[in-house]
Structure formats: C-alpha cells, structure tokens
Image (tube, rainbow, N blue to C red):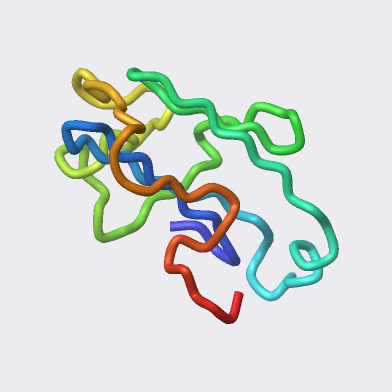
Length: 112
C-alpha cells in the first residue's frame, strides 16, 4: 500500500459492511516528520462515503492506500475510493452496542 508510517482506518456498519483504508503520515525513514508534530485528523462518515480532513484540509481520496490482502470491492466498501463506497455502502450505524475507540489504541496496550 503506502510507504512509511500510516494511520489505518476501519469503519464497520451495523450489518457488517466493512470499509478499510490507510493514510500516510510520512515517508519511510522520516520519523521526525511524525514525532515532532501534532496530527489532527477528522473523519466524516455517511452511509455512502468517507472523507478525511488533515489539519482542516480535505484529503483527496487518491492519497489513500489499502491493505494489500483486502483489495477488492467484495471485501472492502472503501476500495478503490473511500469517498464513494461500493454497492449500497453502509446500511446504518448503531452506536448503542459494543465499544467505540476514539484517540486511543484499539488493542488496549497498557504500555501506551
């Protein structure tokens, strides 16, 4: 997918629709580019598309990458364009069940 460090986004709809894509933070080997600045990412999700904003600027969907083991419209609603989801997109979202992870590691690593 993309070189360097990435943020991987995964959005799962109530009925199991799955959209996954990556956004590069910096080029390979350029760790100072990500460790010395604050990164402000906002994700806007609708039933038919996903948009990212990096420091208030809309990220073109062409800058997104995809996990190479999941590059098909059958497995990933976001491939090849998160802004225009495949098929009917998501059927809905129910935030009343399960956990929502915002701004933390989803793996709950106690050392982080």
